[in-house]
Length: 372
Image (cartoon, rainbow, N blue to C red; front, side):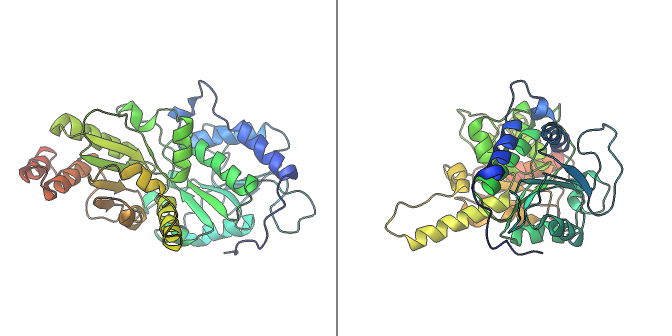
């Protein structure tokens, strides 16, 4: 893996103009269908809009093994390809630098590191390995997400919807090419659209400007405000957002328990932000304390938090020490299934442990959903 480049490019100039042009091309449009599109299809549409800009995308390069084209013929083109702006990012380049967008399918850590060699550890890497048949959770070796979470020059995301992809891409362009920050962004891309049977707020609502900004910081609330007091908070990333939304529906309909639903595109970013805030507060004891984004979102209540990820449990567990109240992390490596009924049982057990309802509720739920 390449270490971060010693010097960022000079601010402004053609790099800044290209980034501004890309952000304008990715701006939300009234009536846009991306809210209802899967992340992969939305990204294909956005890549197509960038390519139509002429000089913004100069060429496509194969990276790793080639995969066949998807039948819908979208702008993703092939599963293992890289789309780049005209000039590669490297220190000391004779020409102005321009942003990079890589579309690839590395399932193993060595394959991902090969992509990062191609990009110089710079730009926006979008991995759609989750759309391929695989024996691993989310289509990648377990070592890959763990490694990404440990790389401080990487900002990993697991977006749930096309609108989240848009928000993250725009934030990445601003961070990398307008603010000139080092490193790269990584997006895990799936191809499942909005579940028509799920609550509309869970997966399909277009993002407001505030929600888009919050999504790029790691999490935002997708359930509507309710006069009922919240008794449990459910957090989901990627495809798990639809699962936690379904669990919230079951809690309300079957048990009359109000639950908040939060989309968490990046548990890693939330944890790093919380750690940075704690470090700053330690070093500046007389200053107004900084409040981490995860605490701004969740510290208004001591209700239990159930954080769900399609990766290993430790990915969601990163926020555990930074939230008021108990956090229960659930991932692909936990003993139970990551299904809505099991999440309901977990929520009921957390409430029973807190003395908020009789433990018999847990037993009733296990029988009701035929989980034993």
